[in-house]
Amino acid sequence: MPIFFRLPGASDDRMRLITALLIVYIVWGTTYHALNLAMQTMPPLFMNGTRFLVAGAVMLAIARWQRLPWPTPAQWRHSALIGGLMVFGAMGMVVMAQKMGIGSGLMATVVTTMPMWLALWTRWGGERVPVTSWIGLGLGVMGAAVLALEGDFSATWLGALLAFGAPLCWSIGSYASRKLDLPAPAMASAAQWLLGGLMGAVTAWWLEPASHSWSPLQMSLTSSLAWLYLVVMGTLVTLNAYLWLLKNASPALAGSYSFVNPVVALWVGVALGGEVLTGQVFIALPLILLALACIIYGQPVWRWLQPRLGLGGLRRA
Image (cartoon, rainbow, N blue to C red; front, side):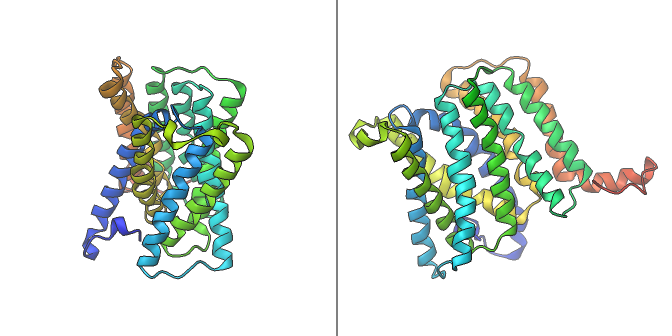
């Protein structure tokens, strides 16, 4: 378990779960704003690659401090696959799509498809996904889509392609992290981030001419603080929380951040960007809350409803 979730006592499992969910819900809801600030004075691919290289180096130091063994050759390969999909592929696509000016509404809506993909891979892999989880995921997408109507849906064809590819890569990497043989959590995070960050840095040097002439002296104070926030809170803390959720919660619950984050992002926009709330928020929020209720509490409620609705013989999807 990552060092951030070592709470004393076995009875703290529920508190670990709640803490991890709150971290993922709140912090990742603020990272879209932080990415935009960091990219003001940093090339996007270079910014993303260095973010994960630094976070990976810190995590490696923590892993060695914990005296964790080095990954086996197979574990290095698995870490390279997951890091390539999630760190290099998905996160790289997100920053490039944002840099290309994809509308905030479209980006927020597309990201909500991630838990649907993850649930699909889980089902195809032989695990049962409760029908209430499917209902909750659907309601979550609907709520996020209503909320995103306040944003901009403009996009270039390449920006849209990158935006749709990001949640697909993230979902495949998330599923792989549940199934593949990996080292201990701290070492697994270090290997994935270092390898994914290295892929991003090399690609930036190859495809991003601005990274050749870029100097740290060009960074504004705002961009520097945003980049540091992405390293510490967005990666070291929150990505560890998400990886822990993938191992200790259902795929639907782990992926539920994707339709909660737009709510947090909206409040960040109101607080920091002077945005104004409209009536759509009061339609979207109940849908998202109902979605979370279906995912978190849906299974016992479904078992209670089945015999009363004459569905006792219906198997879950």
